[in-house]
Image 1 (tube, rainbow, N blue to C red):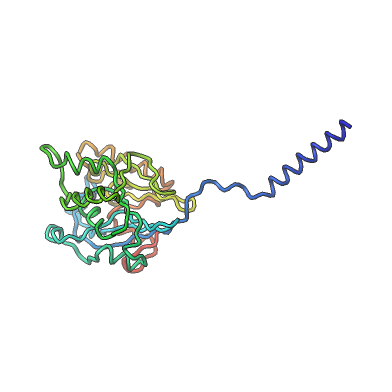
Image 2 (cartoon, rainbow, N blue to C red):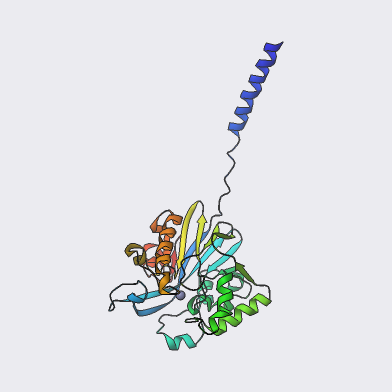
Length: 287
Ligand SMILES: [Zn+2]
């Protein structure tokens, strides 16, 4: 009797194993499959490289790309940065080949009203200045960036270089309308598979993004790493203060770690991203 019971137990155990093997392996909490495109909305010709890569020769110039990134998947149409459109900036800078960011997004196949989220890397005019072009989007920005540029930046001793007061008013308005989300610090998941990281200090509390798509991570650095050359030369981008250069270089090393390869770190203003990835007109297909 005991023998029979033992045999039955062994059979059950074997069957159990067989059943377990036959079942598909439980899928890991995988990130959605996002499509990712770099959209070039303008060019600033002849930009001094020494303002992008600390320590570069003073006379070296580069036609830099003005870029926003469109990330689509899991029911979201997400922009990383929003570009700009206000007239005043065309007087301050030579801007070539400009196409307003909402028109550009439309040409990529997404009506501006269907942009669900705009994640802002930092508050400078050429990244924040297009948020009013996407009427239904939730806007995401670091809490400390919002606090600083709506407050202390405009007090004695504050630094608001490159900040458009109209953008600040727009941020405050969006907050009162319930369309602003404040991201609280480092390693924050904003949407499934999309995480924000801080510490690079391009502005008071700039952030960069990791997008995991089908298990492959990409880092979108924005101005926390302007050019591929920052990575290869281990040279800082412009930072909130000179004392932040070391933190910026450390953040760039972390970006490579987080992406698993320097090839999957996408710098903020490098025109080379439109050569490294298949490109049609203004749009590079990163993934
Ligand atoms: Zn910037």
